Length: 138
Image (cartoon, rainbow, N blue to C red; front, side):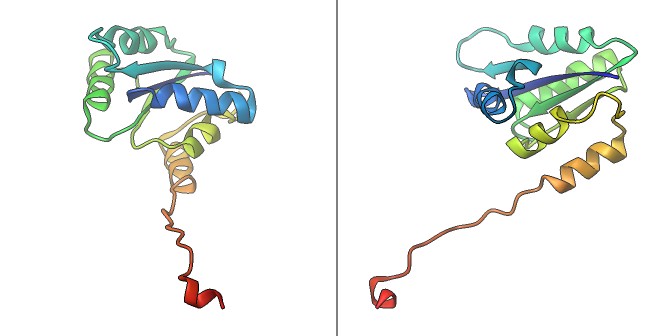
C-alpha cells in the first residue's frame, strides 16, 4: 500500500527532519514539508492538499511538532474536515518516529495499533550529561 508523509512544524524543524532523513536513509524526498510561520503565508492549503491527495487505496501520516500547537490544530482540523480514516496525525514527533514509519515496508498496512506501537518504540528518554568536577578526576 502506498504511503505518503507530511511533516509540519513551527520554523525550520520540518526541513531539518527532511535533511536528516536524506542523510541517514536517502528518503528525505519522501516527505512533504511545511515550515510554518517563516513568512505570513498561510500553510493550511499545503496540509489540505496533502490530505486531499491521499486516495482510498493509500495511507498518510502527518507528523507535527507540538501536541495542541497551532500547526497540530490545523492538521487535525483539516483531517476532520476531510474525514479520511487512513491518515494518522502524530504530534510531538521526533526523528526516530519519522525514520521508523517512513522506512516501513510498502506491504505493511498502518493500523492504529501499529502506529501506537511505533510511537511507543520511538519514545525517547531525555538524558543530561555532565562532566565530573575536577576534584573527582584525580
